[in-house]
Image (cartoon, rainbow, N blue to C red; front, side, top):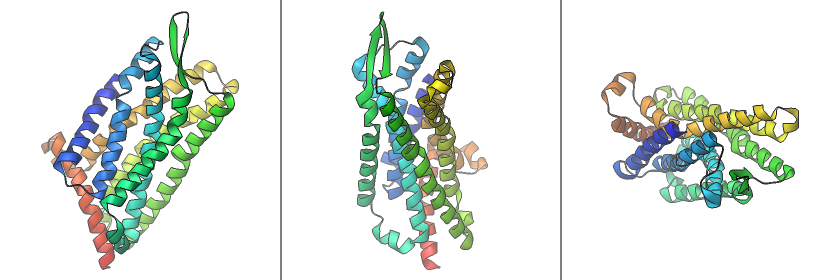
Length: 290
């Protein structure tokens, strides 16, 4: 958790700085800025979770228990919804280039981002409501005190809206994009497409095990309590690790291997983000011309 915290704060902090200071504000940059902010906020919880897992005792009080508990699902929902928005946006640029050129504005993108964060906060609200501290024999725990029925509802909502439905829409969008790129022989412009595909695949790999163990936890009577406890901790850490991986993907997939060895970390990340903006515009213009 501490290692993820350090890598995530540095990596996402650099992405936020590059987009906010070094690059021109565009629709694409707003998407990735929001994604980096979501990961950055999640990474700040690392030391608290690490200490809690290591000691088994919650040292940080009732308020921090609620705050740390809500940060994790907020990151899950905001990340998958932003990936969904980016996928739909990219699909619209390829399929309806003229329409997107006329309607794809910073103001509308900002409104969509605000909506994403609002919906994510509402879905994560249950963690804020039900999280509390419990002390017994000088041993304090940060727990979820919801009923079994409420827990089931939260878990199923998390699986449906935090993974299954957005992922299905993303797969459809990228299938359409791939068909359009091949039909117009534009696969040579697909490097940002590969970057985004890697980001989505990484998200699924990191979050799917956690979602599965959450579903198993709902039916805890059928499984070993020790196995579920260890599984939740391990898969939660894997899901948490997703927060530092996106900046690495931006860096090492934004340029070819020969250039990567020569460029600094800052230059690699900046080039990848700028390339994302240029490629989306090029795909849209090429499709419009054809």
